Each structure stands twice: as C-alpha cells, then as structure tokens.
Length: 122
Image 1 (cartoon, rainbow, N blue to C red):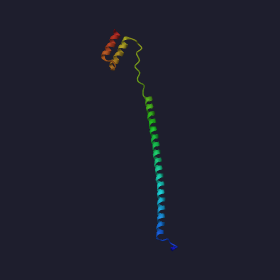
Image 2: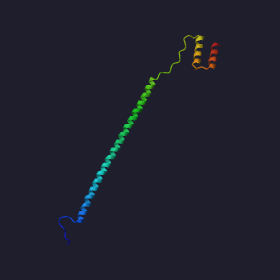
Image 3: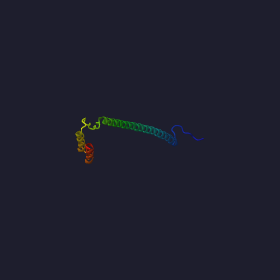
Image 4: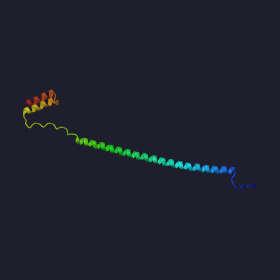
C-alpha cells in the first residue's frame, strides 16, 4: 500500500489547486466583462434611440414652424390689386382716356389701342 502523506499537498496537488483557482478567476472575470459589455451595449442602444427620438421631434417642430410661417406669409400677403374701377361716366372721352392709360402702362400695344379706338369711334 502506498504511503500517503498527511499535511501539505505535494507538487501535483499544488499545481492542481492553482489551476482550479486560476480557471475560476478567469471564468468569473470573463462573466463580469461580458455583463459589463452587455450593459454598455444596452446603454449605447438607449442613447441612440433617445437621439433618434429627439431628432424626429426637432424635425417635426421645424416642419410645423415652416408650415406656420408659410401660413402667416399667405395671410399677410396683400391681396392682388383690384382692377381700377370703370368710371361711372359712360362717356366716350372717359373710355378713350382709359384706353390711353392702358397703352401707357404697356397693357395694350399701339395696334390694339388703334383697333379699340376705331371701334369706339366707329
């Protein structure tokens, strides 16, 4: 029967114990690092989602502001100038003066003015 030593373990026992301790430490540190990486990843995803939400809210606010500004500009834009009212006097002279002013403004060419004048006089 082999003799068994009592007391401190031998060289092989110390090596085995050291290997167990080192393996356990490596496993624990690996698990801790994995959890830390997972937490960091979740935090990064949460930050990215929050930034997307903020950007979407800012774009929505910008679109609303642009629409509101466009509506205000349309409301503030002056109505197109109404055509000058025809004179109440239905005389020939008033009509000729009106034709002359249209020609002076460039709304009637000389040929159109002459045709309209001939129509009034003829």
